[in-house]
Image (cartoon, helix red, strand yellow):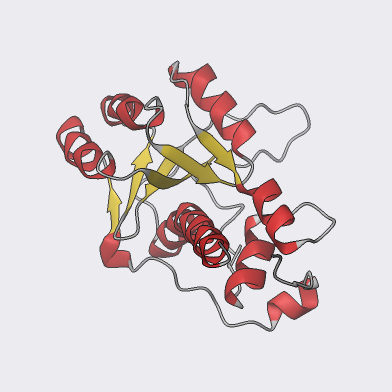
Length: 202
């Protein structure tokens, strides 16, 4: 059974209440190996995680991104943010990213997987691209990104105000932390919502 959805316009999305997502208190910035080991021990308890990366945008023609500058992994209670300027912390993420028993869900993951492999030699296993899953679930014809998915499934607006900020900066501002965390956290919530709805129709 399919749920009828209408794809909202950009104007309609702008009118929606802002998606709050993760509280700042539940966003953990991981800066060393010890913190990373603690984060990984929490993350590996879960079978599904939200996943995303952020890279400092490029503005000049021919400029190559030096990203990713952040790797985000979310469970329902917390989001862990790994700034890649701390390589010892990033190394520990391989235990999660390369773990085929843990499903990593998100939007536009092909690029995320590619740059993580290229920069850190970590092969991200067991990923689920939500763009096509949401498209199939909602029955809309066009490709669905995170902003549209959140609007359709939750009636809220995923803010993109920090999208072009400097992700290579450290420490990050609170608004950047919220943006980065909600990119991976909202993906996890979308996956759970679809699975919950699908199971209720069985």
